[in-house]
Length: 125
Image 1 (cartoon, rainbow, N blue to C red):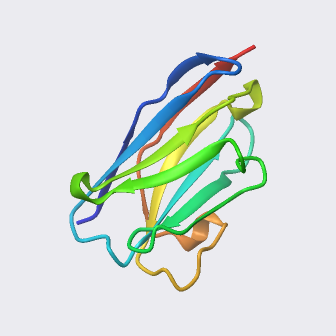
Image 2 (cartoon, rainbow, N blue to C red; image 1 turned 30 degrees about the horizontal axis):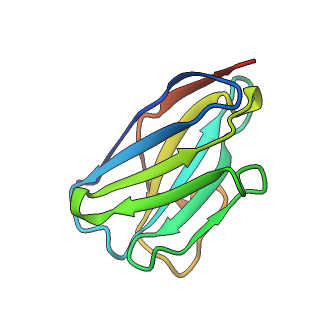
């Protein structure tokens, strides 16, 4: 059974950084794509970025390019989202998601089969 658990959220001032972690368990994820999404109050869930577990190739939403980086530590079965230059508009609950295929890397939440419970990120101005 796939289980994803995010951690690392918190309160940070504008311009600061946070690193979120997603601990993945339950099976081998070498053929999976791992996505990060976020959802602010009153808004739809938004794509942040995605990475192919084995290949390590990653793609980002325009809002994340140049500021956010996704990486994987296979030995720890953990996916990271490094977030720099955070702004108040980055405030949201951040979710890790998994898709058992890397042929397509969807940017819609419906393309992912497994989700973590989320971790809150709050950026103060």
